[in-house]
Length: 198
Image (cartoon, rainbow, N blue to C red):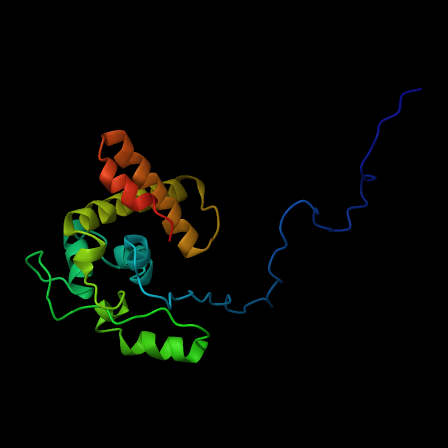
């Protein structure tokens, strides 16, 4: 006599999901709008290029400026954080953020709103954008992220998206890939800057 092992009797599918994957969000009522995701802001001084790009929400910025030259986008970011249009810096535009302990979310949000038009104030106290990065490095990084986003968009259109994720993790992954490209091209100083932890 031959026996077939069955994990579940045929026809008795009770709709139970598998237990191997991570839990999913609860189902919304039909017709309900999807829940909005909130983006966590950085409340500490922006000491790294990756933190500046996260703060400016580079993916959203690039998607809003589709078709724009990436060097122009990089120059816009440079000016937002205290640089000037010619690639230099504005000496008066220095950072004002210090490391704070036990800051309430309301105070952090208030500070974010207050510095929206003066983002250079989010840099470490007394530092300017050129202490953190150069315009050339910023342009190269923005170009790399734009290339990765274009490839990702092309892949999503071809085979469907893989779902959402945390923006910071996505940017970090893109920076690591870009650092690897710099290593391959022999531009080790750029790669070392990008590989520093946040």
